[in-house]
Image (cartoon, rainbow, N blue to C red; front, side, top):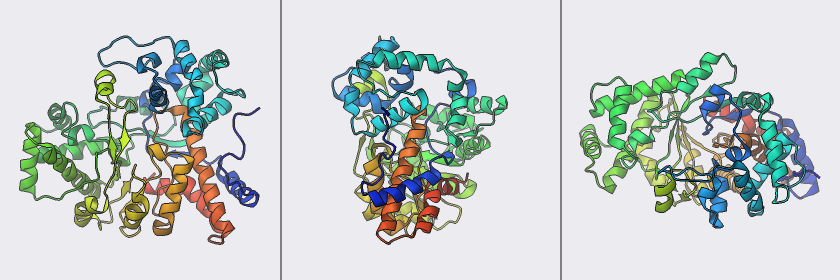
Amino acid sequence: MALLNKDRLLPADPGVRALARDLYDTIKDAPIISPHGHTDPRWYAQNEAFPDPAQLFVTPDHYVFRMLHSQGVPLEALGVPRVDGGETEADGRKIWRLFAEHYHLFRATPSRIWLDHAFETIFGFTERLSADTADMYYDRISEALQRPEMRPRALFEKFNIEVIATTESPLDDLKWHRMIRESGWGGRVITAYRPDPVVDPDFEGFAQNVETFCQLGGQSGTSFAAYLDAHRDRRAYFASFGATSTDHGHPSAATLNLDRAAVEALYDKVLAGKADAAEREAFRAQMLTEMAKLSCEDGLVMQIHPGSSRNHSDPILARFGRDKGCDIPTRTDYVAALKPLLDAVGQDPELRVILFTLDETTYARELAPLAGVYPCLRLGPAWWFHDSFEGMWRYREMTTETAGFYNTVGFNDDTRAYLSIPARHDVARRVDAGFLANLVATGRLTEEEASEVIHDLTHRLARQAYKL
């Protein structure tokens, strides 16, 4: 018995389902465009076998271990490394058994769909993962991981990935991207510029980061002018390794457009560690506008991913560090927050800004109307907690009537979990096929129009939006 229903996520009405299935069939095997994500470029550079099933599916995946942790499973028991180097479980089979015993927790979640998709389509499983099947799963996956066809580059080709973007700090020397380039392999792996460590005063080691950053950017000092020139230099360096975009993970979407004297004074204060919370937020806000101005110069597409209260648990942050599943969505304003940036450069034909949100209440009220009028704005897909069937459907329902399809950018998977990439794109394609079939069934699109739009949403809009 298959793990996956062949008509999963398609509409329940038989007539609409048949139309959705026809639409889906036209794009189910289309190339994957992955313009924003967090896979490790080291994988493609070194092309080594993945270590074991637990290290592949459990220990690095915050979607997985946050759910288990919510039911009282210690992160140490899942092999998540501690900041202090303290002991954590190192036996992959023990970690896998624990995961399998708790697999029922993922029922009806997107993680369950992604995992089952990988288990069936990559490893051929037809029995559900459970305590009883844990060892059978572990042994089969372990054996498969030793085969050449399971190396990162072979999977890249198997998954039909046309291009994938990783995301790196401006302090990164991009050595893995250089190794990929020099290897002669034809897979297109590009980088993206994520300047958070040098634009967020709350980032660990901010002042030292800025000093190192300016040196990397060929600057002899750390004045604000030198700091901006270092950004120009590093952005150009990233572009030389294929970058077409920048990415900004700020707590809010706040922007400012202060005069230069005020900016320089603020910069000096945050660099000296003397800025209060409001001043640190003001600096982040100003830097979003500065980054937009630089995008007008060099053409890099700007992505803004605001609205996450990151590392919400202080004890988890202290024990395990950043990005350990304790990020929580927050209320986010866009209309007032973005106005200084939009007033400054919002009409510049060179600027493109892709907006994401974790606050679904803003879709119809703020984001769709903004993208529906400003030529520089596009809406990123349903993101993170909303990268799901219901989340994607709500996104389409609340944005399409105001922003249309063509002020959106298709789908991007935004993941570290390499083997989930085909599953995530498949979910998006099925949701879009169902949504378009419903529009045809209710007389709002013709079948010919729906056939064109499904291709736009699957690959054309991402290529255009990210200049790929």
